[in-house]
Image (cartoon, rainbow, N blue to C red; front, side):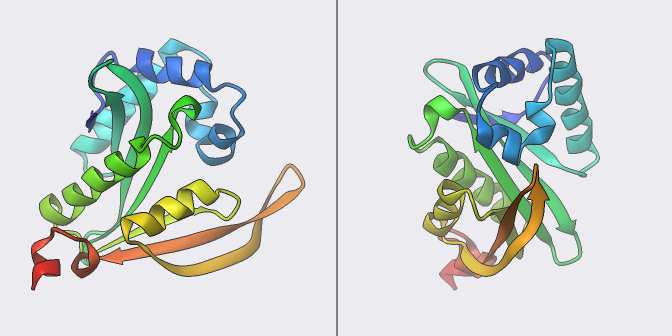
Length: 181
């Protein structure tokens, strides 16, 4: 698996994923920014925007490719919350055809290593819909602790849903120097 920041030309892969998942409720419900892409050009513009965000340290958005097939299968992002702590939020999505195959788990694990080892994160949060059990179960398998549940705090198309918040400290992530102390 390859997890890397986007570069020029990756919009084509991103758009292909959107086309493969155009009826995927998860994509519309959780990653509306991506699901709303209508053309390869829009996808390429988004990819270039993510490149600029990376340089400005505003957001770290990466694509996920299967190494052997060179197939784009997902996206993972890191958003700085407070640089002085430092704390971040992480999120992910995977092509519907690759759910349950460990793609999200492996890419999230690699991003957590990047956060704790390279960005020296003290805290990482993950916030997801309570209607997305795959996501919150993954957070728990990765070692996140459930910190809160905002029940029925949002409405979309007349349907209420809640948000679940997870958190992890640098001392709780296996493999970090802080966890070894």
